[in-house]
Image (cartoon, rainbow, N blue to C red; front, side, top):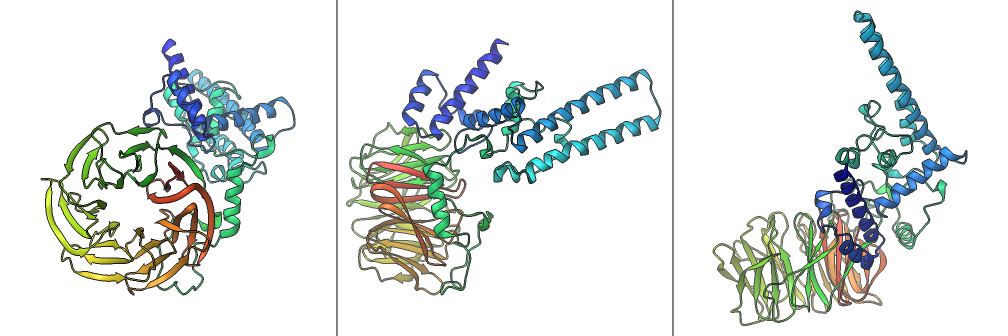
Length: 533
């Protein structure tokens, strides 16, 4: 029993810490984590029962209060009333089952008695499911979309109404009264937000911002309407239905001591690496939202690029100190310090994981292999800015050099495309998910190029602002996010619609996206990195 209480106390502390993080009370979260002695990696071993935008603790309390009010007086919401009615019916069914079992033990019957009992169970189970379906599918109590989309499973009527919650299966809770804490945790399983009938949920600034974005983009922002780009820029849409609208909001923020110039998500989406003028990489745990700073030998000057190796936790950094370092979160594995010029950018091949390349201040591109750590060859093509392999196949390499973007074959080192047209230096390039299009950014504009036609098929000018970075949205492939001076520009490329989102207080130097989680990261010269979803 003592161990059970310790486990419950530990779980409650984790929920409180998660609530602080979701409410952006980061200082309180750090202090509480220290005082409560919470394991920083608790979400990996003790996952939340529900990943609620406002914290599971608030969702639990909202549901508990809703049920309590329903039991206490007649001013109740229909979903809560339906739930209580179901629980009462379930208890009656369990009582009837016990009585039938006792009767069968006392008076064993033939096949007909057994068939009658099974038939009664089926009829009772069907009656139990009716209010559950009503609660999920068609109530007027303002139940959330996530609740309405829950799949009704037949076995729920025979066990608990919302199945065995994580808390119940782990800590042995359940089977108590209608408004016990265990039942409250069960009902919250699978619910993102209960209705506003209790008056506990009120609009916040993020919700208003989401509504504004939806209002400007509309529900058709990612559909094709015969624009000039239609025949050339066609993507497979994400499974999320566009009719449900598009949302984009900040979900996290960390601070650095100096300007942040680059960032990249790990392949599994568990880590975000950030670097810049601090001369060292900082790792952001996506489960706990806590940071880990590397403590081994660092660069001697600003870091210009950071990239994770595919299917690995290893990463590489380039720096103005003329070096390239291959590391993991605990140590530096390889260091190339004999270069004669600033190293500006690097990238790993998506299929040949041992192969990477980097560009330098002398417009030179070098290919290196990891094992043994050595230079494979020097490209005849020029590149002094960002270098990015074509995703999926890695057949092509895109390289920025002043106002020019060059595309060339990795195996033959022969040029395939030369994209010209920027009036300023190209600071950032990015491929779309299929590698059919490339976006390039200079201060005055962002251009989208087609590899099929070899031409610029869309252009967005930075009217009243300046552009510095770009990335395609991981869930909406035809949506390009552009980093400017303090704000993000969301550009629905096919329809040429835009929306401006205030984000930082200075230049947004880098953007990264994670296909696994749908997250976007923005790194800025205001010494911060923000997460968006």
